[in-house]
Length: 361
Ligand SMILES: NC(=O)c1ccc[n+]([C@@H]2O[C@H](COP(=O)([O-])OP(=O)(O)OC[C@H]3O[C@@H](n4cnc5c(N)ncnc54)[C@H](O)[C@@H]3O)[C@@H](O)[C@H]2O)c1
Image (cartoon, rainbow, N blue to C red):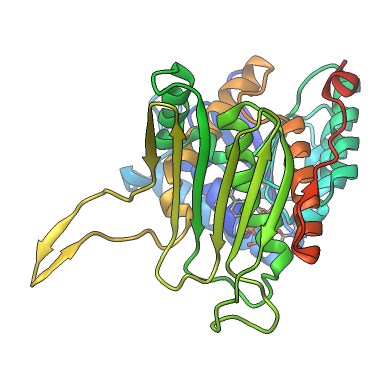
C-alpha cells in the first residue's frame, strides 16, 4: 500500500481538526472522504480542503501544503451522505471516527465488519457493556483494528513523564495529582459529561502511567461555581484507587474562565515530577510578567494529536495499532460508569471490570 486512504466520520470540532491534520501534516496518508449527519458541514469542509489543494497545485502557500514523499499535490475529498457507506467504501482503507460517542458503537461494529482499521475518538462507547461487546467482537476477528484517541499518551511531556517513571530512577510511583481545567463549557455540558468526556482522560492517564487497572473511584462534588447553569456540578474532585494500592486524584473544572490547563504531578519514593506547567515563553513587559495559556485542547495538545495520527497511519500500514487499544477504551468506560454512580451517591464505587485474560484469551 503506497498511501493510506483515510475517511473521517463526524467533522465537527475534532473531526475537522483531524481532517486538516491528515491533509496538511500527515505523511503517507490521504483524506479521500468525509461524512457528517450535517451534510452541509461536510460539504463546506470538503470544499475548503479541496480549494486549498487547488491553490497548492497552482503554487499556493507552502505552510498549508501536504507532503507525501516530499511532494505536495492536489486531492479531492468527497462527501458521503451515510457514515456507514463511507466505512464500507472500497476506496477508504481506514477510518477516523470523530462522531459523538453515542453513535460510536454502531460505527465501530461497521468498521469491524468491513475489516477497517479505525482511530476512534474517546469515549469508545457510552457504557461498559457496549464497550465490552466491541472488545469481544474485535477479539473474535483475531486482529486489532481499533485504536482509541487517548492522545495524551502521545504528548511529548506525558511521554517523558512515563519514561521517567518507568526508568525506576525515582523509585516506585505512589501518587498522581492531576488538574484538568477548561476555560468554559456550554450549558449542555452536564455533570455526567464532566466524568465521561473530561475525567476519562485522567482515567486513561492513571491506568497508563501506573500500568494497573483502577479498582475503585470516588467522585466528590464541592459547592459548584456560580458561573454555570442550574444543577451542573462543576468542579469535581475524584480519587482513583489502583489495583497495586496506588492512588490518583483529579480536579476537573470545565468552567475555569481563564484558559485550558492540564497538569500532572507524579509522586514517587525518591522524588516527584510535574508536567503541564505551561512554561512556554515567559515575558516581562509593560509592568507585567507572565506567559499565555492555551485557549483549548486543540492548542495544548496539537503536537500530541499530530504524533497520534502519524503513528496510527504508520502502524495501520504495517497492519498494527500503536496506541490505546479497545481494551483501554473499555476499561475507561467501566471506570467512568462507576464514577457516574459515585457522582450520584457521593460514595466510593468498585469498578466492575471483566477478567482480561478470559476476554482476550
Ligand atoms: N481526544 C480529545 O481530546 C477530544 C477532544 C474533543 C472531542 N473529542 C471526541 O471527539 C468526538 C467528537 O467531538 P466534537 O467535540 O468534535 O463534537 P462536535 O459536536 O463538534 O462534532 C460532532 C460531529 O458529528 C456529527 N454527527 C452527529 N451524529 C453523527 C452520526 N451519526 N454520524 C456522523 N456524524 C455525526 C455532528 O453533526 C458534528 O458535526 C467525541 O467523541 C468527543 O468526545 C475528543
